[in-house]
Image 1 (cartoon, rainbow, N blue to C red):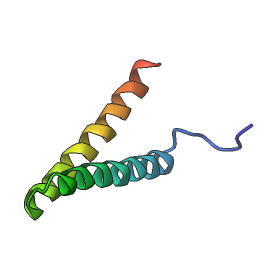
Image 2: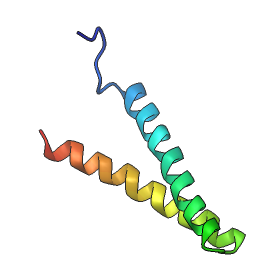
Image 3: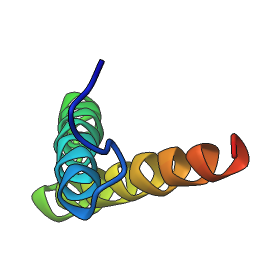
Image 4: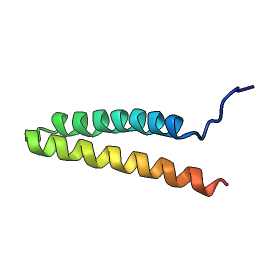
Length: 64
């Protein structure tokens, strides 16, 4: 049993930061392997992390 609320604002912030880091790594790494420029590497990382964070947020709201 958990002694804390899983949906507190701090927990949601930490979860979104974790998924942002994973998305940034996946997007940037994929673009780097494809030989993109430095600007495109950063943009693809930002895009993938945004998709992951808002995708996870949307799926959690549908379960309720």
